[in-house]
Image (cartoon, rainbow, N blue to C red):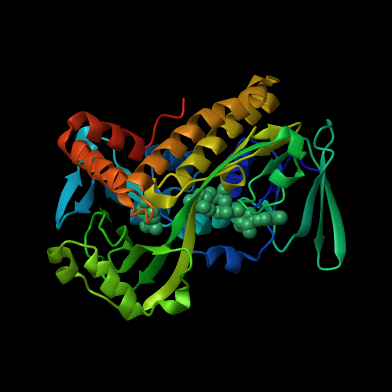
Length: 391
Ligand code: APR
Ligand code: PHB
């Protein structure tokens, strides 16, 4: 088989890129390791910035997002038994975010690919990029016992943190920057009305907590837990008891609890691989970088990679101009690092670090007090949360 752009990974990054390119007449084949049901069974975050929503519109997949997604003009920071509202709208001159689950958005993208007859191959095993340093890269994979090969002009690795693309770059050409945190987030999805129409990020001496939502009947809650904890060790009752304990009393009292329909622990990690391209292989999204979920940047940073890569590929195919492809890594990384900085900062601000000295604890409290007392500091938080420009 032959195509123009071979895409590895059928998460939001790979699907969005294949959909955008298809609409401009550029052929793609997308190889996904898992079944569609498996991909759509994963519960991920769901705060979309303006730039992401714009890209969904350009990809002609925004209809349900516009209908069912909720526009949020602010969120709360809870601390010391009270809640302070961060007015995103006022602080950014009218900007907001859309709360719409990544799972739903991925479903919309798959349906759009189907409608256009996009080539999406599920259960592709042992996907391997070859000859990426040459002008004629190709991909091999297996479907059951059947081996297959796709020749392409370019390979795009959208296969997430554990994918094969990044690993196919010779290690001497790759520099990795990483930070791990001594805790994870235990998340619970429950079919209950959310305790607050806007997100509540809570900091407490027992640890961080987050009240989020997917719809008016579906809540998503998180608490910070030690890395040694397991999902089995937390009953629903214990989870909600701990969550309530970390929230202001009025919020805790108002919370309606119900059985969890999903419960998982995600360790927090910051990670960047540089450069984001090698020869004719380009990395995008979680394949190249990971952020802790605190600033809701993961999906949104993936979107800016796709934006840059999409335009670079358009320039190549429609105008014979390769400057976008040559500059892709540098351009994408400039914004990636701003997302890293913001996610790291918000994580450091709101979590409990068991090894912090009393001095560091005072500094952390002062950082929050300063933030909440300064319009300039709040404006900086808001500007990053709604998404920095792609330019
Ligand atoms: N071959 C083919 N597909 C693979 C391989 C492989 N070797 N390894 C992984 N994949 C697939 C995974 O099954 C997954 O469906 O690649 C996809 C990667 O999707 P995501 O992990 O969702 O990554 P991405 O599309 O970049 O999405 C951005 O932002 O909010 C964050 O982590 C969150 O997933 C989100 C990400
Ligand atoms: C979520 O709803 O899952 C969510 C929201 C905001 C975050 C992280 C996760 O910062």
